[in-house]
Image 1: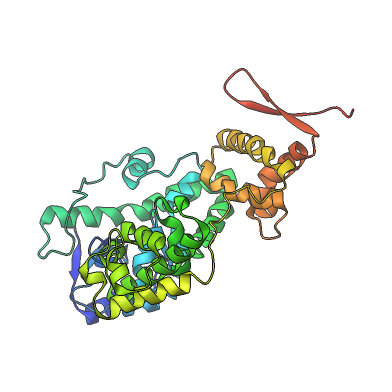
Image 2 (image 1 turned 45 degrees about the vertical axis):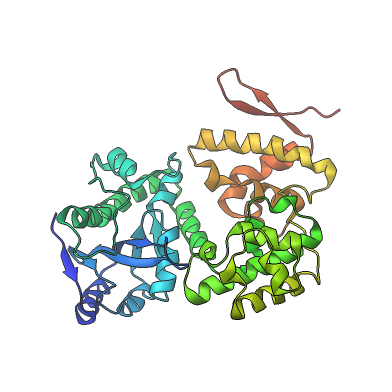
Length: 382
């Protein structure tokens, strides 16, 4: 496989200028985040303007990519969520127009397919196999590693053509486009420190007062990790957050006695900031967000399970990934009557809205068809 390295900013700017004269390009990244808070970009692969390039972010300034990302040129990626995260932090921008082949394939009956499986199924291409433990930050990369990286973008434009043709024939091209726009609107890492505590294991065993402390300590840890670009658990382990929350120390000596806390957490500014966070957390109790459906009227809660069964049946019959069609949160929002519920408008409403309303109103019922599926049937008026 032929590819070219780009290791200078001038080379990158020249290549971006050529891409700006095209209508699309394929994009992928390689990165690590084991030793940092933010993902560390190690490689950018682009296929477009009749060549494949490997861009070395360790050697050149990536700012020319902003011009490309802000343009109308379409970026084609596969499973783009993490790429968008790393590009946000490394470049300060993401493609304004994006096509995710994994999302698109979900409207053709695939369920979050890998690039390897999708290339094999759609193009009969056996993609190069790579080592998932490759250290992409190491230089020089081997020929096999470079070939593997280049192969991640080598067939994406051809795959885009194939998927888009099928979606257009099925009348679903606009659905895929809408899903890609939704993807661009999702938040990236490091945007909600105040919610970090809800991801702690065993946080549910804490009492509301202790949860208030856990919320403040976890938010402090998140901000501290971002400021020094370190994994959160290297700043303070989860066990220490739980230990501090239960003990609620007021002095450095008491802080040092909390489970999971060691000497480095009690010295200098760290110890003072932790005690300040404890004091802040004690001012207000915290309550975990209610599980989806718990804030529904009690009489409506059984409807979630019933409607979920119908969603799964529609997804099967229409050959759409269920996760794309409707999540449990989507169902709850719709049943609750939220104006911004995803099921209230658009293609999702066209497929599901009427059926859900009929089920909830008791004007329809689900029956087993004897072949592994469900039928939505009208209920006669009493």
